[in-house]
Length: 127
Picture 1 (spheres, rainbow, N blue to C red):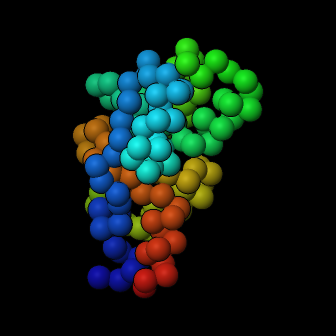
Picture 2: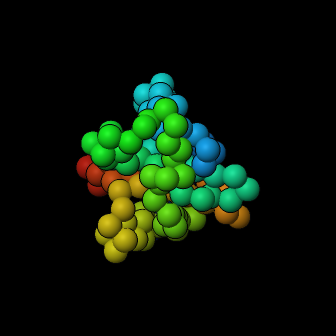
């Protein structure tokens, strides 16, 4: 299998951290820190959005009330995603086309992992 054909399932991080849309920014920041991750999938029955460290920093800079504002107000939606069997090359193209740094990996609409630009960089450097 060539580097271009490697499935994202081989480089994704799993499991992903999820929160509900009603989670406050303060609690989301705590979850990011405790789990040493850069994003949270906002999901109920389906993926509703994604909230990143950058979203939280922006909320701080805009002086939002972090204890009462929910991630629903700052999350990115709709979410660009990828399936586990799709290639790493496809992930890179999708990230570039949509100007995103994180792609949730989904099966039947449920997040089973995440691929980031850092994952792609590590993959390229190992190959």
